[in-house]
Length: 402
Ligand code: C5P
Image 1: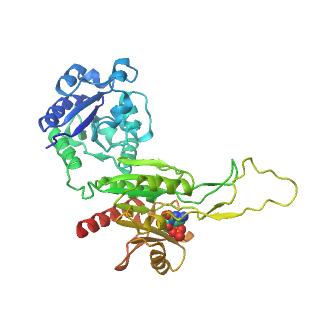
Image 2: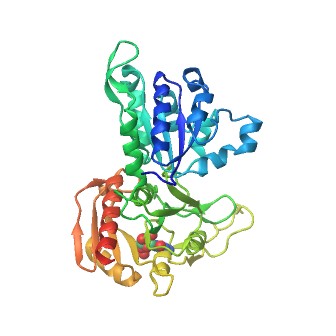
Image 3: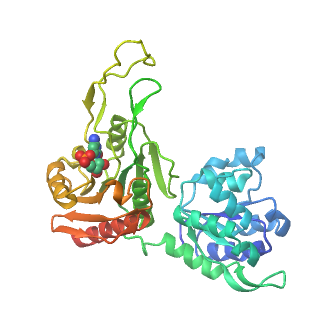
């Protein structure tokens, strides 16, 4: 059942749009509140009147409609739901989602939302199999967008193959699976994840930084959110897109990261994956440092706060499970075991960041998980899979201890 669940249904313009009417009816029969946004092309296939009559409210179609904006506004549309469902998702809307294009109400809402998203693609078989669409789908899946794959069968243009919209009962089943506790063992838990590098200013134009890409921390946050945890991601500057279903707090310096983490407490879980700069410039110059012709200026460094050690310190706000990372270039396990004791955290994920391992900026990671029970070596996995596996271990830990 979907009682009290709020669904924002985005209907894109393909012949399968007519099935959205059946989908709305089925979602409402299960008790969901359904609000619909239609692209302009969708209105060529079904009318906003029909969609509005079946949905819980009238349909929204126009980014620049004074009525739509004063009734709800596109930012509230993007926030006020438990799940965003895109059905049918056309090749065009999939491409816009993948590349962050926001040129109408539907695509703007999709770019503005941080809610979990489920898409049900439907398009001509050649469009579906086109490398561009497949690459866009891979990008979306990587970002944590859930997909109800299209079905294979006869299509509108007398062609056969994959591309037909999944049948509405199958879409409803995916909605229910996403919104129920099933596969969401961390539902009701709060998680805090740090990610990326920090930037420590020297003067208004220069800073100290490191090579962290944020890929691993972002993947962990995405995986924890997928398992149901309410997840806050405190991240230094990265190129990584924020994962869906995660609240991102962007920061620059270690001190800002610590303040954001402390403000995000209480949390049940803290995973410190950020590569926090150990030192910052002792004094940040107010103006750009100039070459004077004399000796080069010297840079005095001051130690940054240790966020992992601070979060691990005993106290009422200490998360029940604190996980740190150890980036080592030699004696990886020994150093990580010592680091676990020194920082006071519960687990350490140790990885080899020697140049030969290619971890920094790369897509894969070979890690060892150090717990109170000892060290466990995982096979080489993608950073996404390390995130999934760590989140699953965290879920097991909470199931075993509560
Ligand atoms: O001491 P080291 O930097 O090797 O420790 C790595 C672990 O400590 C990582 O989990 C990192 O996120 C965390 N850390 C931190 N704040 C610092 C330095 C490291 O949270 N200032």
